[in-house]
Each structure stands twice: as structure tokens, then as C-alpha cells.
Image 1 (cartoon, rainbow, N blue to C red):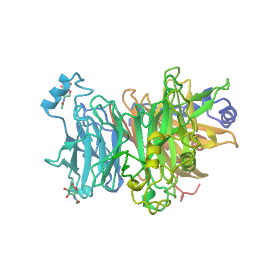
Image 2: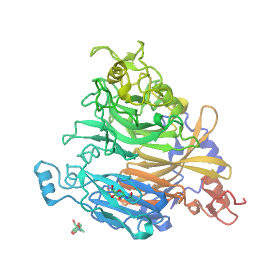
Image 3: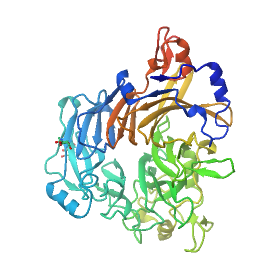
Length: 553
Ligand SMILES: *[C@@H]1O[C@H](CO)[C@@H](O)[C@H](O)[C@H]1NC(C)=O
Ligand SMILES: *[C@@H]1O[C@H](CO)[C@@H](O)[C@H](O)[C@H]1NC(C)=O
């Protein structure tokens, strides 16, 4: 273990006065206190590396089922059901490859045998008490089916339902490289996907249920412009369920040719109960709006450095379900230099932007401006049957002028800025980028902390806390950096179980489970334990161990 034993109070003070003086100069605190290699991690006994499927790859979908103590995993040709306590303990494995005929058809169309002509599982949603709904790319021919997982884990049931395979079009992309996102809500499947073989027709789709099938306006680059879908999450707006909105997080090409930046991070939303228009926008969302997410820092020369390449989103629930905290991980788009950042957004700021001016463009040769004309009623983007529209039960009842307005004004003029107008964490001049995030709320001896777990493109996870220093500055501590795979490979997905104090990390080559803390690696002495400043750990009189609120210090 590479432990920095020279960490003294003196050094700590010296370093903290240096922190974030210039955010573009990588401050020394970004170096981890402890670095743990994959081999060392295994020797600590605090991790499990999933080892059953040697030949499969592309572990990507991690669907937690905390009630059943299971995690469902989607990978290449396989669906897994794993024990959350130990992912290697009696895993249930379903092999769901494509037929030989389909594989040949895929190969004949010029696609790659290993990277494309297989069934990459990209959607796992709970369907009812016994079944999961699962979709895969089906070698460029998306397919969905039901998986029976039993009522209780003790039943040891995990198998495909025979004879239930259906088309996955509009639910899962054809190309495994085009990420899809999905949410199954009240029997309706909402998905951000590419709908066609060529991968040019992107859409937010609604299928499967009893409501009308819906999508975004086709080939309308004002709505979606080559998006990469990252995340989807239902966030209520009020106690009135009709106001419920589904938020999509994605990045897309900026709408102006030659405009900098080339990529923009976006938050988009739709009303769950949108039924489309009746004059126009028939079977198309009539409440779709989007806004830009900004994550940037001022550089030494006064120019902003923008992090526009949204990579992952984590939604931290709070007591108030209407106001979760949104964490985004971004990297620099283009390849001038490597850099990434974490920005935090509040729902209050997001709602303010959606309630603000619409972006307007008079014609192809005009600039985007704030729309200042008359805004039709009900305000575009309002959900039917909600707090402000109790008498309009469906978007089909909306006046034509509302629907027409929506079609041409899907974007908000103002952008959403992060809390405190700056990133929480910035990394530049390093040889890696962040690719994934999850957050844990921890009660420590001296108060509550948000602990960030940040996955990198070199197959490590950094455990980070950010402490306020004064009104303007924060101090960042990288408590540990852990190598979670045998070979350096980008982290694709991370899920956390606070209840079990475990983190689950996936990549193209593997799946690893690790404990949120390894207090004893900080050393044998009381001082080592306290100076580590790991909120999970405390000196119990004999050793550095997991702090619990009931424990006397
Ligand atoms: C796994 O791959 C190796 C080498 O490519 C091959 O020899 C072996 O038969 C494969 N095993 C399975 C179960 O497909
Ligand atoms: C769950 O859904 C499947 C597929 O629609 C259905 O066959 C099954 O009866 C349902 N089970 C329960 C318990 O509702």
C-alpha cells in the first residue's frame, strides 16, 4: 500500500492555503492520500471482482433491486442476477444471444462480429412483481422480452419467459455504441434512443403502455441534434401528479454550424401525460423543452474553460422529492487538452430557466435571441390537468397556437448554471478524465458529508470530499484512489448501496464490487486515522475503523 505517512498537520496547512488558488493549476490536493492497486484491493478483502463469465464483455446496465438484495446486470449476450452482498455468490446467469441467422445477416451488412453483431443488453426495467422487461441490440435488430425473477429471491428463479420476444424498436438503439436511456413508469416505457439502423433518427419515445405512442419531432435538429443520451429521471413539480415531468440529460451538437463549443450539455423534459397535439404535432411531444447546462471555470487569461461533454449524472434524493440535487460529470469536448469537472445543479435554478424566456430565431440567418413576443396560454411546457391547467385534461385540448409555438421553440434562452456558479471539482493537466459519478451522504463524528465516488477513464475510482473553507473557496480532498479492474479501462457505470456500504463499478471488461471504506489502510496510529479525514472512519481507541454515530470517541 502506497501510504503517505509524512502527512502532518504542518503539511496539511501548507497545502490547504494553496488549494483552488487557480482552478486551472492542478492543485496538489488532487493527488490521492492513498492509492490502492487492483492487486492490493483484492488483498484487503473489501472487494469482489465478478469472475464467472470470462468471455463476455460490455458490462453496462446495473439495475439495483435493494428489496430483493439483487442487482441485475446487462452485458454482451448475458443478463445476470447477482447477490448485492457478494456478486460472486451463486450468480444467476441468462445467456441470451442472437440466432445464428441474425448474426450472419448482421455480418453481411458489414458490421463487426465482436463489437456489433451480438446482443448487447441495454435496458432492464422492473415490469411487475415477478418480471423484468429487458431489451438488447439483437445484432442491429433490437429485441425485448420478459425475464421471470420470481417473487422472492429464495425461489432462485431467473429465466427468460418463453415465447415473449418482441421488437425493441424505439426502446433500444441498433448500434451498441449509441447509448440509450429508459424509464418504465406506470406501464409506459419512455426511452431516449436512436430508432433506425443507420443511427441518424434520434428520439425520445413512449411505447408499450396504453397511452398513445409518442416521439420527438423527427429529423428536427432544433429538438435533438445528434444527441448522446446520458440519464433520465422522474422529478415531480408539485403534489399534483399530473404535473410530473420526466427529465432527460444528454449532450448534443450545438445548433449553429461552426459555433463553439461543438457540443453542449442539455437537460430536457416532457410531461408524462403528454398526448401530443391535435392539429399538428400529432403523436409528438407537445411539452418537450430543453435548456443548456453550463459547467465552466474562468482561466488565468479571463477566458472561460467550458466542460461541455456531459458524461454522467447522479441524482441525490432529498427529504423533498421535488428538489433532488443534480450532480453532473463533464469533460472538455474536442481534444485540445484533457480535463473534467463535477458541477452541481439545484432544481430551483433549473425551474427558473424553464420558466424564463424561450430561445427564438427569426430565420436561418438570424441569431438566437430571447423571445419577447406574446406567449400563448397555457404557457408552453405546462402539463395538462395540472395545477395551472385543471380544465384542460389533455394536451389535445391545448389551443393550436400553443402547439405551434412548441414546435419552433423547444429550447430555453437562458442556460442553467451550477450552484455557486462554479464546479465543485475540477481536474486539468492530468492524464485521465472522469466518466462516472455516484454520491453518498455520510454522518461523521463532526457532522454530515457528501462523499463523491468518481470513476475515471483509466479504471480507477476516486473517493473525494469537498470542504468549505470560506465564502469563496473550497478545499478538495482525494481520500483514496482505487484501481477497480485488472487492466486500465474506462468506468462505464457506478451504482451505490448506502444500506450495504458497497459500490458497484462496471466497464467493458469487468464488474467489481467494493466497500465504501477501508479504514485500516490509513495506518496503525490514532494520528494517521484522524489526519486521513475520511468521514467513514474514526479512531475507536484501538484501531482506525468504521465510525458509527453511537460510538464514543
Ligand atoms: C472463451 O474464449 C476462448 C478463447 O477465445 C475459447 O477457447 C473458449 O472456448 C471460450 N469459452 C466459451 C465458454 O465460450
Ligand atoms: C407480470 O407480467 C407478465 C407479462 O405481462 C404476466 O404474464 C404476469 O402474469 C404478470 N405477473 C404478475 C404477478 O402480475
